[in-house]
Length: 257
Ligand SMILES: [Zn+2]
Ligand SMILES: [Zn+2]
Image (cartoon, rainbow, N blue to C red; front, side, top):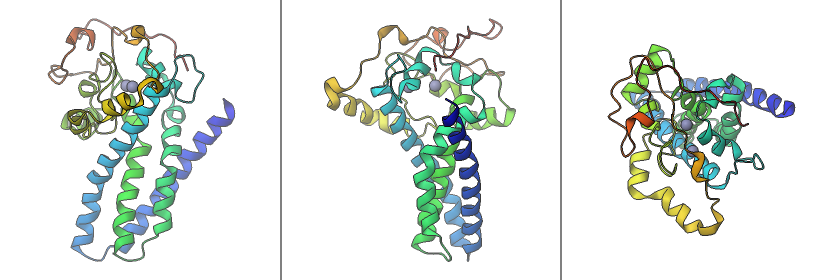
């Protein structure tokens, strides 16, 4: 839809501009070592919050989306049927929706407008970091499905700073009922251990739209260069998820959305 594409492009430009202004305002308000330390701490804090928010939206999409394209959340289920479709999206299609999603957090951060260190400064720092990571979540998700990524990206994936293909493979196997968080993946272990999203799905009962059993693809993603052994992928035979190097790329069906 052409109009939606303009909205997405506008959201990306606005998010980049306003978030940059917020960062500049926070840096100007810094008045000592503690405020600098808090700015640094707000980055992982914002990343963890973004992981949770994006994971919750992902769970909603997976729970209520229909494969026939009849709902706003259909692309989530479409991604299960065609995990590589996301790698064919351009920058606007990849990042626009997340920038729209981040808009309320960006707006809250602007409203706080910290002039000096205090409650508004701390809140704005966390909200700005949250917005920043939320805006780039789908780009990170795309990289977790991409055959080739920049060595810096691969390094950050290996360090666990951003979602790795090996970790995300845990979502694309079985019933797609775990590892919903796709920013850093940090929140997946505690939330899955608590059974957080699984309990929400059970509580919904018949309101949750069941996913067809034939949705799981035989191959998931990943054929990034210098991929380490898939030790991080439990429960599913690794051969179903990560093709051995030199076997060639998995099939690339057309995107359903
Ligand atoms: Zn999913
Ligand atoms: Zn995925």
